[in-house]
Image (cartoon, rainbow, N blue to C red):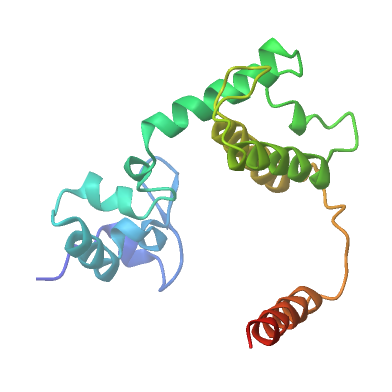
Length: 179
């Protein structure tokens, strides 16, 4: 059964916005929730015809429940440690006054935390916070700075294939030594 057409919709041409009775413009047909195929697809994914549940699937991120609360809690603690305990300030990497943050500074810090984990240390000796949480916080900062335009990408640019050829050479070296 076709949906009822309002007087305003009848006056508007195809693809034109509809002016509602309050003078507002309505282009609801462009919204995913008002496109039947998207609604049906989302309903199939969610297993419900609940419009709120269906609408939620079209939002990004829509599946926050997959992020473990324990990881979030530790990441927040690591971010809090930098912002408050060390005095860097909340979201200081977004500060537009300075030129931005250098990617390698954070990659180096993440690398140091990963090395400490590999050496068997779970908690950072200075903050008493999980090294993994510091890694998460560093990654979160890099992702957010990139999105906000405050990330200075100062990675060394080299031959992208150089690492792959080095890996192949090492595999060949191991093969020859084993023979």
